Length: 621
Image (cartoon, rainbow, N blue to C red; front, side):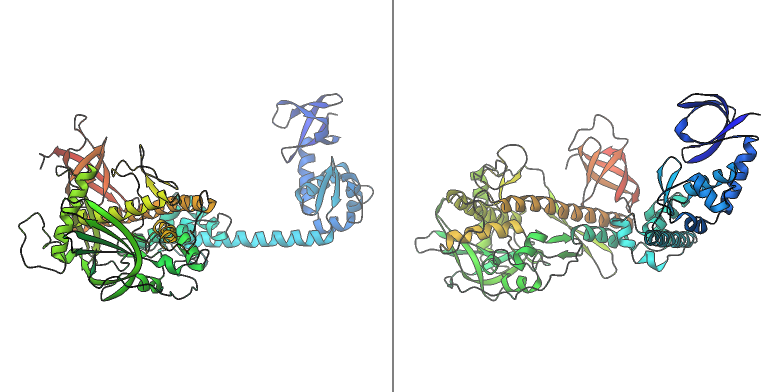
């Protein structure tokens, strides 16, 4: 009669006919008729008779074995073999088939029995077994719950437990949670994405909210509300001359008024420009809750229809340069002669009277300094702004940056009317107001950056010795602006960099105040890295939301064709809105900076993209 082996291979028990045997291997014919070598240490039993019947009976008897009873039978033994277990369970006359059945059962119950060697086992301790069985029961219940949720999702229903975790499932999933496992399994079965599955059951909010949720989870995981913080305490400072009547120039929606300007005629006929910057830094102590909040947020976040401020509202209200009163400010005064040359500069920390908060939308139409100038002012401080505009042009020329033939660039504002219709406003960069404000702020930023550099105090400088603009803790030239020193100081209510630089500058203007950071301070390097990464993420979110609302605008206006500027390759910038896209069908001989007429082939709000196809090249304006 032919002899057979009972062996284990890849976790399965099998039988085979012995062809040849040596000390280490068996040469066998498997159940599938193939010739194979089986290592001796994988073989548990040899037997004679019908191999198929043997395996079938062993499997059947194994299924009838009471695992709890088997555990009790061998539980007192330090270790035991399959043969011993068969004798304890079936009796001393246990057959080879019974031993095989026991082996199958032992291997199938690793929670009950620990494998110690070939056919040698140890029963799990009672306490350990109870814990393991409880864990198995929990897992069984969890799998049942997952399946129940999967069936609900497949039927278009949204279980409440999944609804509570939708934001994290969509944006920051923990793949070990039951909710995620259920959603992932249902999406796989429906051959769709998790986003589209949840959208189909009504779990995804409006896309604007969806994008906002993702941004907040990544950048503000603890929420946007400020923790408990001290009330702002205004500093004790001297007042500036009452003749200094400062005014700010901002958009209508701006309530963090960081900067203001003044202009005074001196007895010698020269003009005195004043640049006045809010100074929350005076009231914020190093390492305080307020400073920790600034370093955590890094900047105010802007997006269409809203913003998340860097400082809490009570601190903004306390230090914003609102009109009608004296406000604490860091002031730079520059004396300018008749040839537009700066003959003297000095800085103070003081209270300055803010006479007006001018709003760009309200004065832009009347501020046309290139046109003949009238003796009467159309708005407060118009004459001062006319002179400051002339000074700004002279500064641009002195820096080698005056270029009246430069192609226009635009900034866009996105607003919503009472009917939730998107409105896109356009403002040309380099407009008279833009030129005036930017040049005056550059004057302050470069002057104060030079002060820090000459005092060998570190700060967060904007440098461009070559290549791209970058941040540095040491001053270097900024060739793009034509300046030897440059840093941001003029937005301390809105940017952590400006707060840090202002804090450093205060130590020079108030000698009894220590600097916040010393040279090679590791915290300053960390602040630089944190600002660059966080500020970049904020700007990317703003661009993303502006592009999304531009697509909504296209849909609402039912636009079919648009004009665009070819940036490079097939990338175009659509005119009249903050939106870029890729164009198909573009002839290879079309040059960059060409204006194109394009057909809109579709919009994808989820991916925030627009389909564009080439129509023709437009004549230059």
